[in-house]
Image (tube, one colour):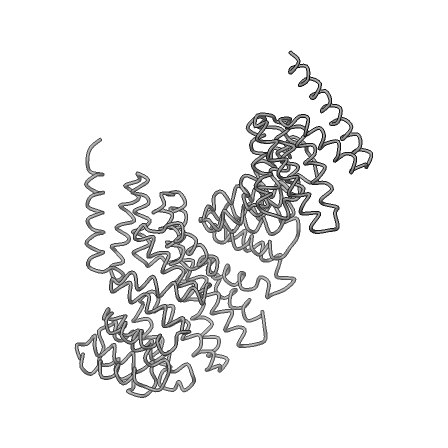
Length: 635
């Protein structure tokens, strides 16, 4: 009984000193306050409130202490007391939230203290999940720790509960923007779209957010949605936005509306929208108007030629091959009438490359035959090389050799050697490649190696490429081809090492990012890293159909069929003559249960037989047969 009475007296005294300490602290008598807290702590060593209040005072004093040693001493004592308080009262919301606040005082100085603040607030949140006094600092801590998703979730609740809170609005906007970037980096574009839409509800005038959202919608092929997103922001009257709107309308097939949008821009600045206007007129079949617009856009002939070439490439990429040919052919005739022989040759090379890209070999021969006889500019070599390739493809290899002189120009030697080997004259061809690989020209050995690679003679290619890399370790191009040769020869470890070495020195080398990422996707290995690499490649070259195909395929391997379908549909539009893309897309639809669509896509892939090996064609035929057998089974 006496012991109990004594203990009660101690508690009463502790409460007295605790009250004195708080009063002294409020009046600025910090020395007296600390002494009173110490006495209260001695009398009530198990009291969490005494510890957390003293910790709060020490943290506050520490922030305004000039002496580094004394500041650290106060912070450390404060942290110790706060941890002890949390241990003494693990289910007390008030103490846990105050412990979090203590550590928030110096969380910006040490990640470990920020982690302690987060730990305390999270423990308090378990007790009261919707308590705003902990959600705001917790959101701030999550933001500082790059836990953007959790920051957005916490801060969103604060915004809804306290509309107009400037701090919550600012932190939420920052967290949302960073989460968008993170989701895009992770390849979670659908999530990023939803977040960007939320950003626009906060900041409808944000041009960056609007264009980013339109980019994502366009990347998955929904150009109608992209156009609508852009149209909603057109009140800003930014030419860039209207031009982009016109382009998305064009991609969505609304050519007339796209043309109207461009007409509103043309009065201001030809360079801002002239190329797109030319493209739209050409696609609409108004070729003479397109050419007139092109001619009127600039006085400089070189600019006219560059614009015509650029527009034709875009049209061809978007599936308007016939219209692109018509535009270039019309421009060639105009340049010929103007006596611009250089312009005729330049555009003829552009048109020849377009024909070659679609295996239109006879059209290529008919185009180049009249101009090759007197071509004497730097265009001669690429024109002759294309002409020889067309003749070879048409089965006229002997005639092709006549356009490939046996001279020191490595391009001719390499093509001549390749043609000879394909004709069965292996010894002559190898002699030329040996001569080429031993030439003084730095590119000679690389050109010889690439011939071996195209002929699928990977051992010879690897031998030359290893020597090139050993003599010039900084040659990113040679190391890239070495990595691809290793992979095709089945030397996967060596291939990975070559690409990793290349990317360490050249982290933005997009073809290597895509190649290594696709290698892993094909093998269903390291899919997270593959996704990051391919996403980076696509960010560098967003209209590269092969990269988009890789992106779709890695999503398929990860089980994200919806994203895989979106990207592969876009890849099929960008490279409509690649059987692999159609096979991949068929695999996606098959996995989604749409056997009819999958069967149709497999047939499209088989129809592009020039791009298929015998093994791939056989595998594809088996897939198609299995699907058709499934479709023929009565329900």
